[in-house]
Image (cartoon, rainbow, N blue to C red; front, side):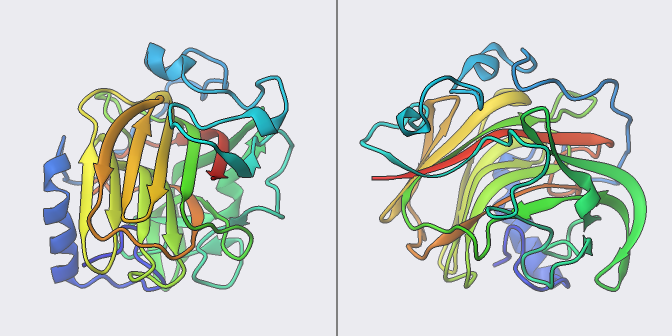
Length: 301
């Protein structure tokens, strides 16, 4: 069974990739085919704009919401919660006390290979920026050598390896999901968490663009199960999950969406955010395209 973002190895056996694609068949939208690059028609909107559906533009507290951070609660997830991690991206640079840039499985450097062999992009620290109260991860068309390959795109990843991890709780991000020309989810964006020893440590994909749709998946050594949204979830939306012993409940814009209870692990996980390019697994390739993150928060009880 293949890691959704594939662990610290770069070559992917054909049989393993076939298994992954079979598992994702229930999420198929526009399907695969060669990458078709298109140009963005405008700059990404601000965190307070009304881009996306009306539910997405109004759901959940924004990074600039008034009041003490201690009063911020998960959107739509019931319970008595204590905030244990928060980044509102209010500065002018990524907070290095919370985040690393690039592939967490290799030595830190400006250019790293992606976390698996399927991606068509190298990770470049220059494609990650914090401004206007948001994290920006931008995919562009530019050839770059990384990991012994020359790939046609540059994009970025951030992660909290060795800086923050947690076992059980609620995690949430307010995300601007870029759209392709046909209105489906562009590229292969994701907000997720992963255990240090994959696959036994598990992988929780809270928001993942698969075949042009937004999906949630939990992958581990014993199971790979998921649920994809039927409607349009491009633009601004809040994606959350409550990770419990033996199950994960997923929420979109504060509304319960699905429960996955197969193969759910209990090892601590760190956070990952990336904006990959791979049209046979993700959506249609559209570059330049920017994944925006208004905030990321984690709570425990």
